[in-house]
Length: 126
Image 1 (cartoon, rainbow, N blue to C red):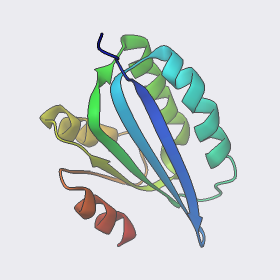
Image 2: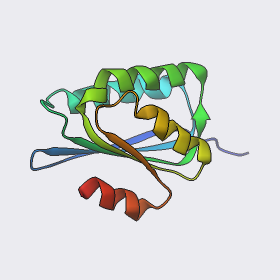
Image 3: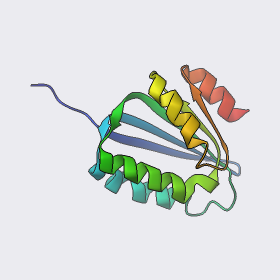
Image 4: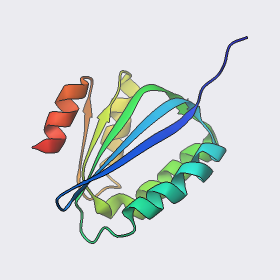
């Protein structure tokens, strides 16, 4: 029997006035995954007064989204897009690079795709 893992892991750190948010996606994301993670992200970003959040999104184990989950992802981006200074998308699929380009339309900060983890971290810290 093969176990199908899916979901989002979240990490939040404050360094000075910056907030570092890390998300790691696994498998095919579902509506229930977003029902769980959205309140956590909302709570973490509730006190952000300026666009100072830097996020690392690790999509190396992401297979995609259910349609309803993709809609939740889009709404989350619209709700919090102005709070991000930089978003680094670390992945290994060409469609993730395209998603980074589309994401720039909905975020006030910079969005960039990386296929090397250390490059993504260095860019976020620069």
